[in-house]
Image 1 (cartoon, rainbow, N blue to C red):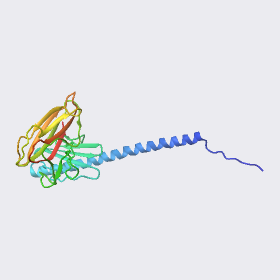
Image 2 (image 1 turned 90 degrees about the horizontal axis):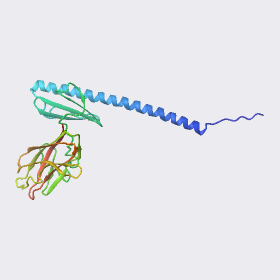
Image 3 (image 1 turned 180 degrees about the vertical axis):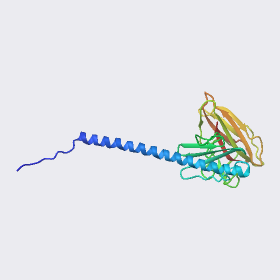
Image 4 (image 1 turned 90 degrees about the vertical axis):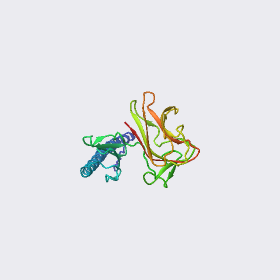
Length: 257
C-alpha cells in the first residue's frame, strides 16, 4: 500500500501571489480613475458648450448677454456647479466646477479652457447655510438678493470672510466686491468699518477701503490688494465699529486676477 502526500503553498509563494494581485488591482484602479476623469471632463466640456450656445442665442435675441445665472437659464447638474459672471453687456464668462476640476468658457476664450474666469468668486456665498462672515447673523428680513444677507451689529470688527487665507503669487490682485446697507442711525466710521486686507501671518495691515457713511439703500463697495513677494497670502475681513446701528452685507465676491 502506497501513501501519497500533497504539497501546499509556501509562505513565500503566497506572498508573491498577494503582491501580484495588489499590483494588478493598482493598475485597474489607476486605469478606472483615468477613464472616469476623462468622462467627467467630457461631461463638463459638453455642458459648458451647450450653455454657451444658449447664452449666445439670448445675446442675439436681446442685444446683450444675460445679467445673472437665472436669466441665462443655467442650473447646476449632477456633481457640477456653475458660476456665471457678466461684467458688461458685451462680456460673459461661465465657470464649471466638479470636485477639483474647473473649466470655463467666455465670449473671448475661443472655446472651453481649463481654469476659472478672471472674475470667478472664490467665496462660496451661501446665505442659506452657516454665516459666511464670522460672527455675523443671517438675516432673512433684509437682503439685496434672496434669501438673506449677513448682519453685523455694533462693535463687531475684524470679522473674517470664509475661505481665509487667500493665497497666490506676487503680482496677482485680489478684489473684494460687496453690497452694503446701514441703519439710518448707524454711527460707524472708516476706522474699523471697512473691507480690510491683512497679512495672513501676523495680520499686519496691507490695505483697506471704508464704507464712507450711512447708506439707507444698497451700495456697492470694492477694494483690491496686489500680492507682493513678501505677502502672497492675505486675510480679508469686514467690520462695524459703530456703537449704534446694524449694517447688512450681501452678494460678496472675492476674485483673483
